[in-house]
Image (cartoon, rainbow, N blue to C red; front, side, top):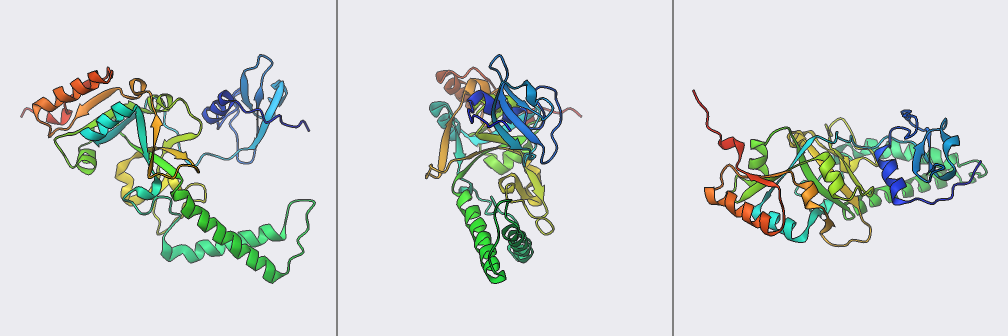
Length: 318
């Protein structure tokens, strides 16, 4: 079997991210445990192909065992909203960067949680059995010479290591949260700006957010899934894409970045604001002059997006 060259360019990583579920050559939809091949065609362009199209590659860079992403990717045109106060908006304009708070800094103490503590015994039992079987049945070419007691101790060690890794991930995972909705949300004004007169919301789309972050394949963007943790657990690799059912009203789409070197409470990520921001809408509680202020500040920083008043203030007739 041909040995991969491990030459992974940014363009190849972007292609793998964008075509994760299907072959970029024939469109075949990958199934769990299929092999995906990354490499380059005769003309040098990157390719992410299935077994059938493997022969189209002139250079094999890497192989992947296909696993579905732990999140759903929205369509490009899906509308996203970010509700914030005026000072955070000015900081966004001046820094030309999105702020990604560290996961353990959110008010929701369940960020990154796998389940409820009261149900942990079932979780531990499942993974102890899983680790015991893994230790007893090593890969071909290796033999297990451990006693049952030694296997149990190794399974316990692996379980403790997995738990420590989960805690550590909370301090190395950075998240930017967005609200998915076709319309401005009265509930989001209340929740994330307390109906402050100096609040505003940024309207964008999934495609704009992805492009504004440079199509960075290290930043994963997708929908949060809401679980009933009384009955379910988040998978080992799913935890930052799962939240409790109580938060379902948020309809959250989040951008997630892992950084094992960053030690701060948050991380600024460079962003093309002209690409990101489609429109700026000021709070329905804002005084008339606030809309002009937001427009003036936006112009000062070179932002050309339209600034509008809230549609919640439209007048009815009876």
